[in-house]
Image 1 (cartoon, rainbow, N blue to C red):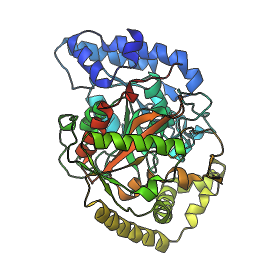
Image 2 (cartoon, rainbow, N blue to C red; image 1 turned 30 degrees about the vertical axis):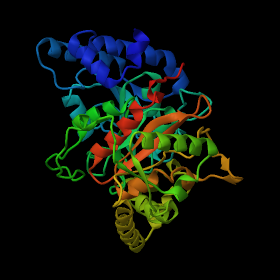
Image 3 (cartoon, rainbow, N blue to C red; image 1 turned 60 degrees about the vertical axis):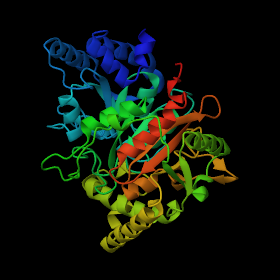
Image 4 (cartoon, rainbow, N blue to C red; image 1 turned 180 degrees about the vertical axis):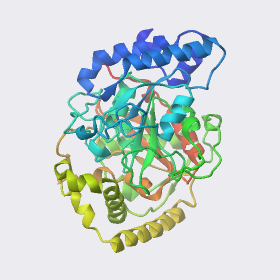
Length: 462
């Protein structure tokens, strides 16, 4: 029963809590025992809060006994990537010199989760400053993939994805500015959603590339993701990072049928991946067709032409957050990061203009389809250190973000769902992207695919 609860979907745990089959304190104790057993292998936490979590769980149980149930997350253990402000709890952004930084108030996401009754287990490890997809952190140590400890869970939200996959928590929140939620979801065989920019608040999320950053969700199933999104989505008065758009019931939008759904595929784009990955993707595409979807060839703007404006915008906005530290603590910034301070304003403005042109072209390409599908990550195993080669050519950071990065620049919703293993201990994800603020259709397509497979029911054995 313990293992069953450790790997149970959030929705099931919520139902068991409602039925009185289990208490929040019991779930938290199981999560603590599991973390103490496997965390030395994973290195997934920067800050672990067992005593605080137990106290919070006891309070949630008392509230439930008194008839107060705050919603489906009431009493559910969860974690936050260590970029979300937590009042009086360290928020380091993966940098050792910020290890004692204790914000005075919660980020909007943190507060909404607390208001919903979720129980915070701790702050998850990440790439330093949420930069990169390597799963490496020179200050707090490299994260490891629970499917194969010799490999990385990718990044930058690698700690969050590893925790969900390994049975430490059923829910975690990360940030995504190039694929940092979806790529770890892919290689850890969990669900990772990056919603439309403006759907979830980034107030109190560090660092902020103001027009690129997204907050995202990592869970074990698509339904769990829909439940969590309904809790944290939406505008808050005074919040400059959220859109004034109504939030539908995402859980109600889920159904196993996708008859007549139009699925766009850019064949030129999806060909640039390891054979193991393209093989899994081909089978996933066949499964979508068998479910009634219609595959429509499309031509999206290429990742290559998106990369220059993307990185110019990101570097300039990143530098505006980090300027003081770049000048006072240059040793914290490797690989020429401080060069971002020298980018002319005219280059930034030109990059934003190009971005608008690309968004218009992408909207035109997507006009005839409901969603766009591709692999999530182009390689099946992500080793720490240098990237592998495909076709005799060594991959670079642009290559491994070619499927995910475009949707950060475009600001569109995209989800990664488990699609198979190739080889046995190497998960591969399917990415499904959609139109702005149409997370409901993205989730519906992901749910239908998930229900036709059993990949999400497999768990690593640590």
